[in-house]
Amino acid sequence: MKNSLININNLELDLENPRFESSLDNQRDAINKMISLQGNKIYELAKDISINGLDPSESIIVFKDKNRYIVVEGNRRVTAIKIMHTPSMIDDKKIKQKIKSLSKNKLSGLLKINSTTYEDESYKRWIELKHTTGHKGAGREAWSPKEADTYKARNGDSSFSHQLITFIEFNSIFFKEIIANKKYWRISNISRVLSDPLCREKLGLKVENNLLFCTESQNVFKDKIFNLLMIMSETQSDGRPVFTVNRIRAKEDRKTFFNELNIYKSNDLVAPWEVKGNTDSIIPTPILKTKDISTIIEKRLEEVTSSDSSNSSDSSNSSDSSDSSNSSNSSDSSDSSNSSDSSDSSNSSDSNNSSDSSNNRNNLVPSNFSISSTNDYINSVFYELKSSDNINNAFYSNLLLFELFIKLTVSEINKSHNGNIKDKITHIINSLQLKSPNSDEIINAIGLHFDYNGELIHFYKKDLNNYNKSKLIESWDYWENLFKAVYI
Image 1 (spheres, helix red, strand yellow):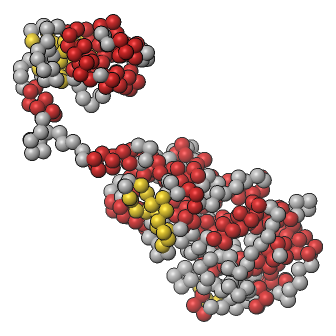
Image 2: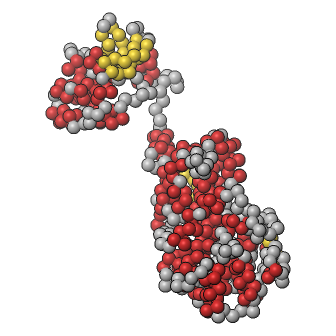
Image 3: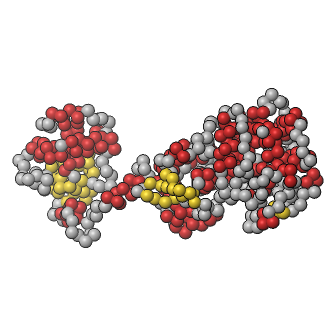
């Protein structure tokens, strides 16, 4: 037995091919008999070969009888190649016309065929194992319909990775940085994660008929996917990927990786929704139209992955485990008292709190707070923010939308006013004559979100590790005074 390249003209079809009811007399008869038996299938095979070439994992098996090379495995493939080279030998006019229409680009590469040649009959064992049954697993085992469907789901247009990508592209604004780094995605890595039942469970996913369904809210799911793909698409300054498959190669590796990202199964369950197909229930996010607003999202990748994101001069000593927060280290907020969520108290005065603004609430926007803007985009952002639940599980989503809402508010109301954002906010407060017993405290608390140039400090750059649910809600409660003055 040896492997070699044999000219297609020297390969002969097996005149005693088991597909034929009886032995045939010559090669032309064998070719036309094969066409008669296979019909349009032989055309489809030829078409696939003309586009993709021959399967490199499976060579033709040839029996050498003196100077003759008889094809004992691969007669259909050899027939398809021969009639592409010489359509005139086809008797069936319809098949002949269709074969003539095929591309000839790959024909030059199909003159010599990779073949495994035997000079004895030992080849029969391999043919028998391939084409017959009853070998107790020694031969080829055809996939069951369910197994075939699973393969298609994992590797075709309905693969788990393809379903997730469809979801990401539909939510293109939220995933803007992820999509911008699409060339750094490794689909095999995404498929490896989604094929792991434990990873799917942590993402809130379950599989029904090879379709992904999520049992968590879409905001929670988006937040998890953003964090996951942000790390998996991270690159060095020269464009080389930081993330490698070694991080998720084994089951234990994937478990550790998810734990590092704090991705766990949520207890806040919703009715299952289809990741790819149930797009009607996803709130479409309008396209950003202003440079200022786009800047927030465009910088988000750098800010989230920055190793210095948790080192800010505005940091305060707190821990997420106790979910408690100390008042800001500012001379203007010295009258504020330290509090914790468990005591249901707040650093802000009574006039700053709505009836639903306790730090124990899970949603950022109090349920009794609404706005009415002539700008549909502002309304859309606000109500997506308001509908976002469970801040701890959807933390980045809340942070991003909160910042975006602040930027939109200032830009929309004060377009004609020059200066930085802090100047604009001060101008709005003064022009609207916001009256409040703690107006200085409000302005100072809001001022902590700006740098010395008066530009907004993204929440990511403040104190990400210690900036927990309590502090985020406290920030909203201060800013809410401004929102009320603008929209109510």
